[in-house]
Length: 113
Image (cartoon, rainbow, N blue to C red; front, side):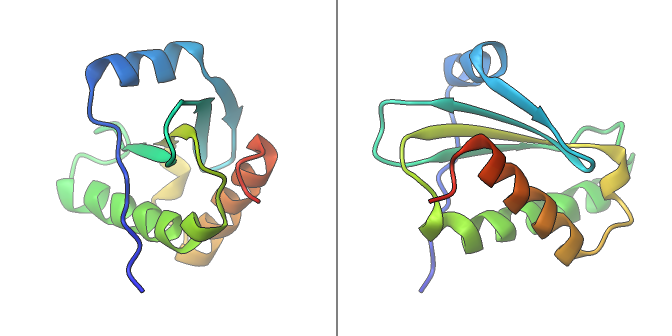
């Protein structure tokens, strides 16, 4: 079954997430989480051009992170805004390594059921 990926769209939501959220640094990503008043958990994925100058490399990282979120989504608590910001160390890592890191950060933030 396909899971719908909910993303953050409004600028005000981005600003409040990045200024008023709890930040958890990981080895491969920075993880920010904040409660919202909605019935779903929304995400934003940030992969800066500092990571790679090539858009294809940045998009590949985004696709990997989105797939991890889609697999974990049924086990996540509703009502959170989450920002995942990639670090440069993520470039040469395998999918399974990235997945373990993000799942660990979900648990640490208290978002995983």
